[in-house]
Length: 178
Image 1 (cartoon, one colour):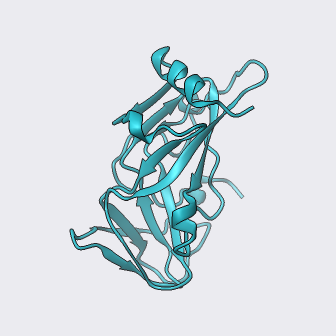
Image 2 (image 1 turned 45 degrees about the vertical axis):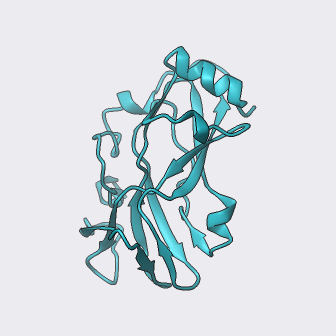
Image 3 (image 1 turned 120 degrees about the vertical axis):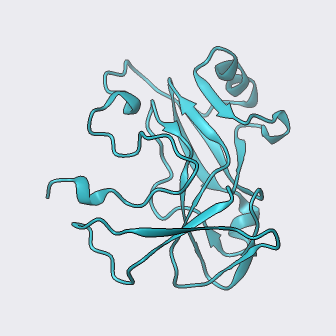
């Protein structure tokens, strides 16, 4: 079941959801709008290897915006730091972003209970489009969990994305054994 605006506020008040910074005007009927942070990243290599650490280069979005190009994967980050302790967060792109031909995640829209961080965005576009730091980029939707949880993400010793950051994080697939 998806949490309503009142249930999201209740979860924030009792500490089960944390959103920093929090702005009440960003709370929708059943979601919370998040914004694009100032830093983007791109992979240094054209061919990526799932078994190797593919490095990235960071750059800040200029005040007059940045033009995304098709065929390039950009890693972005939300301005908002979030914690979710008893619900499953899902990040979806705003419909206005989709109507500009922008995708904000390739596969990673679901967070885990216990995820505590900013959200790395996997940004791609179908045609050139100018974006700006601080623009609304997505919305968080929270689902109730049925049953007890033993394995919170922020308590897992092998969790790869636990280190708090304000910048996009590259794939850590290379840390897996396969």
